[in-house]
Length: 189
Image: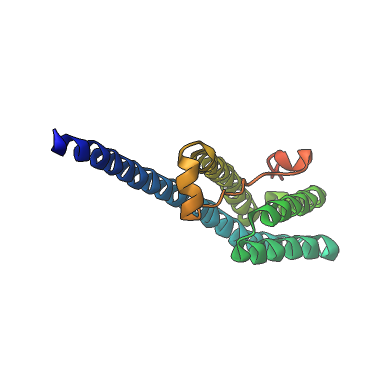
């Protein structure tokens, strides 16, 4: 009977320790899932940023008097690259909206250049950018889903105790701010 008195508290402590370890490892998995989802956005944004200079250079040959439009696109692209490298998701989301708007401006101006609309290189770049925009959208959704799962795990009791002790931080969502930025870029020439 004397051994039974010690077994129960030891078993309770062992169960608590096992729960703590399992919860901590689950939070680590969710955090790594969120990091992986962000890296998928990163890959697609890099692809997008790499396409833009080629698009601008192709259009420049036809649109010689649209310097301000080109400069706006290049500035917006550089701001996004800088923010992506800095890792500030909220500011990057805002800058991405600005880049989308400047690209819309470029495509609107390009409508007035029939030779540019027929250029094979421009058509190819247009297709690549449209495809990349779709991939960015899917990657954003996957990231936000992952961030939500991490945030839920961090906030829910009793895992919130482990999260607080383990220094887990909530993930920022990649959100578009203005309603017009929620629309996909229409790239038709």
